Structures are given as C-alpha cells and as structure tokens.
Image (cartoon, rainbow, N blue to C red):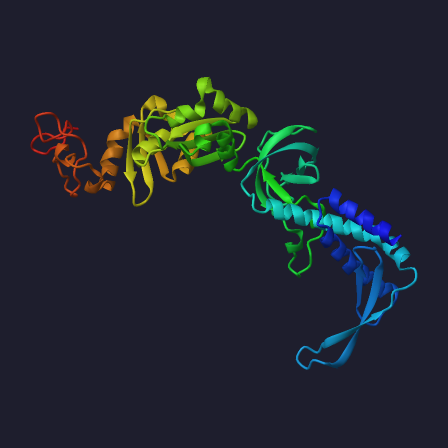
Length: 410
C-alpha cells in the first residue's frame, strides 16, 4: 500500500508538472497535522515518507529540558516513534483531500512563478466561459486567465477590462494583455485573514482595454517595430471606439506611418480586425510640439499652433470647415489628441484667429524662435510691451496688420 501511494504521488507530480520533492514534503506536513488529531497527541508530530520504500513513519516531538526564558519555547525535542500499525490505511484515507489541496496550491504557485514576470505580455487564448461579470480564457492546458468586466455599481473595487460592445462566444480565440498575476496567499482582508474565494479564481488577470494591447499587436504585425527601427512613442485609447498611436522612425529614409499602415492598409487592418473594428489613427511623432500637436489632430487640417510651454497649453487654429472634424464626435478627436501629446489643446476656428493671435502671441518667448527668424518679424510693440509675432511684409519692417507708424490697420 505504501509503495503504491508513493508511486501514485510521483505519477501525479509528473502529470501536473509539480516538483516531486515539494509534493512529498507538503504531504508529510499535512499528514503530521492529521495524525496529531487522530492520535490525540499532546505535542506536535512529524511524518516522514521513505522515498525508496514508501514506508510512512510518525514521530511525536516531545520537549526535552527547560523552556527558553526569552521565547518560552523548548529548544530541544526528542523524536519518539509512534507509528501506528495501520499507518498506510490512515494515510490513504486522508491523502485524497490533502493531495487535491496540495495540487491546487502547487499549480497556482507554479503559475504565479511563471507569469508574475510577464506582466504586459500579449497572450492568445480560447474562451471557456462567459458570465455577466467575467470571461474565463484558457491560455493552455491547466492555465486559465480572467477577463473581468464587473458591474461597477455593484463591484466598484473590481476592474473592467472588456471594451464596450464586445461579446465573446465559447471557443472563440482572442488576444489580450496580462495586467496582473494574483498571489492568493498574499490576498488578505482588513483583519489579516485570507480573502474568501481567491483560491478559486484564476490567478492571471488579462485586459482588452489596456493601451499596451495596441502596442503589442503592432509589434506582432509590423517587423520594423519589432526590430526597433520604428518606435511607438505614445498610445491612447477609448476602447471599442477609437485609438491614436504616435510613431517615430530611427531611419530618416523610412516613413513610420507607412510602415505601420502597410501595403493598402494590410497591417493596420489586422490590428483593427483583432480589436473588433476599433478605429486607429497612426500619426507621426515629432519633438517639435507645434508639429506633434498638429499631427495628433489628424485627420483634420491645422492652420497653426500656438504653444505655451510653461503651462503645457496649445492653442490650435483650424480652418472653419475643419473645426468639427478637429474636435470630433462629442470631443473624441481632441480628447485623444490631448492624451496622446500630453498637452492641453484648445481648438479655435480661423475666423477668430486674429483675436486668438493677439491674445496668445504673448505666450511665446523670443528663445523659441530660430536664429535669424526674429529679424524677419514685424517690429511693432504694443503698449503692453508685447512684440508682434507676424512676419514683416517684403521690403518693410511691419506686417500687414500694422502701418509704418506702428498703428493697427484693423
């Protein structure tokens, strides 16, 4: 019986990819607690399983000498063999529940060790189960992940990682990002007790709304990004609706936007299909905030951009017929552009440009102008000491707004 038990344990350890010594050690500790109760021992017990023969030995740890005055514990113990004659039968009766618990904990521990360092990685899985609160995705045999989409009113502390409008069917394949890996033993409540139900939940949490999902999908579809020639500088999303991605090429002869879009849009189309039709704007990153902000408002055409670097504020002038396109439906385009660039963006139509320029040109410092460009500007200075930022007309030191006497013509 004993050898059969050990053989079964070793076979189970191999099947579940669990370290054999770890499984036997955990079983010894669990059986020791069982025998303490079964034999009604006054002291702690220790169980050893002979790895070769499979025989089980039970020892009672009886204290020797006096207690340590500092710790109030005994420093030495005598192991007394109290192995009962039916030790194998008792072990077999208790082994099933003990082994099942050990296998579950060992499996979760192994998954945690394997995936805890893979946060941000892209995974491909198969939908196993969908409920109103979460979707279970099978990554591989024995490894499952949870895609949470809890009702925020009922579960305000739970994450929501499913794009609005996405629905999953059984056996459907989908890609997602690993955002966290839970350690069930570390999940404790305010009173220091393990959180109920954590051991039954998949340890891996994945997301379909995280911006890095787009980053990983483009790395998968665009070789130039994977090789590092094209760099993704920034990504922002409104999951299920629209996204913007800013890219930059290390090679001046390579168009980063064209590389991401691909021939006839084939590369970006693959990403859009994986995101269930989510619209993606690929724009070119530029270190000049004037150009970067203008690009971020694509597909709208921008007339000019005024920058207040100190306050991270950009005033954008667009043609009147481009105003609604620049703002987007319910402000979506402007909102995404602001998140992408990190600048507060204020969009104004060209019909108000003169008023905006007069009010906001004071935000620019002469240091922002390129060498020699200051000499090409109108020399008019207002009563407030603000230098006109318009270019001078050919053959004159003044722009078309001011006359040679410095008076305004409008």
